[in-house]
Length: 126
Image (tube, rainbow, N blue to C red; front, side, top):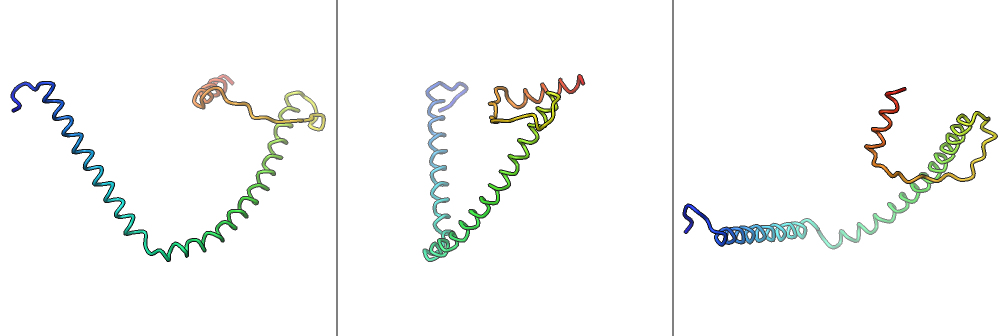
């Protein structure tokens, strides 16, 4: 059937046949994985036990969120103090003379790698 030269039609037949085999094997693997999920899921009663375990976890998550909120507030205050000190130092005035009304994050227009390259060039000249 296939001699020294292969026509376009014969190439397409081989391509379609190969794709069909790949898709059939993927479907078989998919069903095999679904079967493993059924065997490993366990009893239906276990799901009720999991529901009971979820409630204490939710309480712990809320406690962690509250702790993180207080630490974030402290971090924000530290950030404001550092920014105020930097502004006061650059202006040559006392920190108590600087009044910060709002702090907004500026959207970064350049990628991080460009920023690092610029910083390297600046610091290499210092």
